[in-house]
Amino acid sequence: MNRPCTPDNCADCSDMIVCRCLQVTETQVVRMIERLELRSVRDLSKYTGAGEGCTCCHAKLQEYIERFHCEAAALG
Ligand code: FES
Image (cartoon, rainbow, N blue to C red; front, side, top):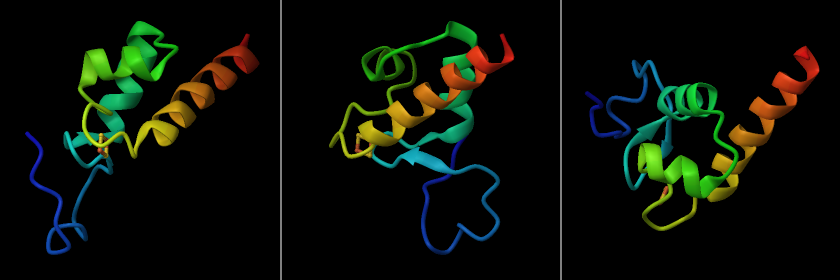
């Protein structure tokens, strides 16, 4: 379970929050992209909840999707 991200607990945080509105972590986002081979922010939102608030994180979510598919293509 994720703790609320505050300046007081960031120093020992083991995972980075990607979507602050929904408290979705980088690990959760990457795992879903890998497992389900998600290709859109819409699908990522559907399976993680990320991006369903203010939408500020959409560009970052898109970067994760593109990075995964670039790396997967490079590995063949
Ligand atoms: S930060 Fe992700 S929806 Fe607001």
